[in-house]
Image 1 (cartoon, rainbow, N blue to C red):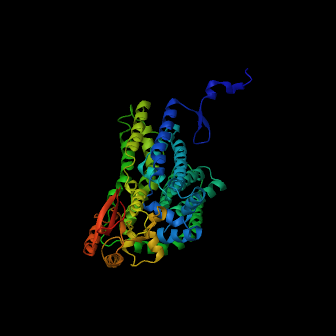
Image 2 (cartoon, rainbow, N blue to C red):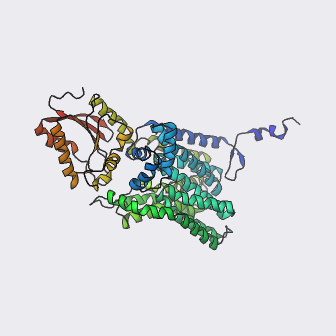
Amino acid sequence: MSRLGPEADPKVLAPRILDGDGRFVHVTSRTVYLVALIVVSSVLLWVLPLWSSLWLDETITYWVIKDGPPDLFRRSLLYNAQSPVYFVIAWVALTVGGAKEWVLRLPSILATAASTALIYRLGVRLGDREMGIIAALCFATYWLVIDAASTARGYAVGLTVVIAAVVAVDHWLHRPRLKTWAAYVVLSVLTVYVQPLFAVMFLVHVVYAAECLRDGTTPVEWRTMAITAVAIGLLLVPLALALPPVWQRRMAMSLVSGAGFRGWWDARFALVPLIIIIGSVLFKRSVAAYYKPLPAPLLLFGCWSAMPVLLIVGVARWVTPTVLVSRYFLCAAPGIALVMAWAIRGVRRPRLRLLLVTVVAALSVLGMGVGVEQMEDWRGALRAATSAMDGKSVPVLVGAGFVEAARLRWPLDPEEASYLVSPVAFYRVPGPAIPLPYDLDGGGAAYLQQLAAMLADEGEPFVLVVNTRRFFIERSVPFQEWLEHALSPRGFSSRSVGGFGTISVIVFERRGGALGP
């Protein structure tokens, strides 16, 4: 026998990876291809956007954390109605790496990578190894996940905790120990502390636990489950006491009169995975020669992919007249990825499965860069504004498009004004930044009238930086036309510096002025 012993066997020396139970398994060429596809797609979809301009909500993250923990805690609650947990993570990254776009986004990248690994593990646990890898690919290339991965907001970190909590509840239900129970309680509570919207996942946990009780696959009794629910509720009391007052203020600042509910179309996020599950179950016998889905907890998959969407749409429609943003449904993305992976894994021909997952990855890569947020080039716009000032400290009027500006009383206090010009906090300009109202209704028009009179009296040039993207209303606000009409009789003219995605930069100066080239 060789001195190397049995491990000299070529089969044993072949590349291996961990399966869902922590065991090493041999790697096939198909596995290598799928893993390579995940890596390449992740680099193209997550990493390349790291150095692009921050978009509006990302500049809020910087504004919240830039002055350190004391202001961080207050601002995160008052202006975002969110737990400070994510902002602490972002502040640590900022402290270590400095004020750079990629530094602010790095926690989201790392969190999404961890989420992808957890989805792989769930796919292996609830299906098989190939289903786990396909689920990881579908997850990594899903457009909501791509958006979260490359965005300096708390959604990616929250999603990691969401998936970890499902892994924990699965472990606890099937391997009940004190440590698995404690892990589930802590992770489920942390889910809400990181992102309160993801509290809808508790119903998914309940449905899965009820299914396991019905099938007799868990030794955990309903009494223990009830005690667990009470423990989770008690740990959530501090957040429940802190959020309602600031949430009411947030809603008072955010709601725009006349904004109708537009969330019904978002129900498609729930209907598509349900159609896939129902179609696969109904037709598997008639196409058994070509399609044979794996046994899987379809109730969990269906609830995870559909219930968060339906609940959020329903709450938005009947409780708060809020216009929905698609990233609110991010916690359903893992369920959607598992449904897609389960459906693709049921295809009997391996080459056809590889073709399907390749198409999924290719469509995601081809579609990257078309997100609305990536069209907000604040970096380019404010650099152009600085260049147009030619080193002079002149006022910069910023119409960022914050919907909160529709309900604030003008003039603002200094912190509210600073919030509404948060892009300038990161991409600094030499002159003072002055916020503009959300639209020209009510007090906003009176404030703008006073501002225009002040600028006319001073007679100095100024720069207008306006985001033409507006939530809740379809039209863009004609700040440029309004200012031209108000200031033209006072000898002002305007010229466009350029468009930077949805951001327009316009210089106003007296005729014959010498601002800029």
